[in-house]
Image: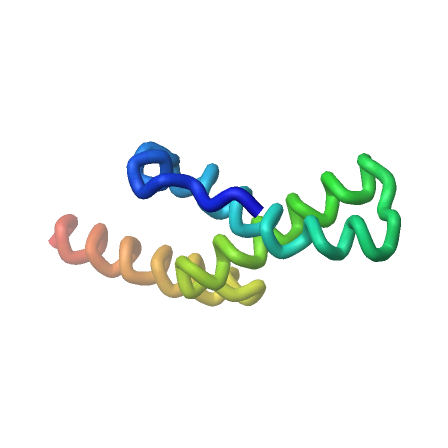
Length: 82
C-alpha cells in the first residue's frame, strides 16, 4: 500500500478524504471476495456515507434534528412579529 505524503492529504477536500478512507477499508474486501466493479463502487459509496455520518456525528434519525430546528426558527419568527 502506498502511503500518501502529508501535503497530498492536506489538499484533499473532506469528501475526497472520506472516499479515500472508504477505499482503504474496502480494497482488501474486494480482492478477497472478488466483488465486481459496480458492486464495489456501491459499497464504497455506502462506506463513504457511513464514515461521513460518523465524522459529523449524524445518525439516520436526522428527522428529529430538522423538526427541532424548524421549531426554533418558528419561535424566533414569532418573537420578531411581536
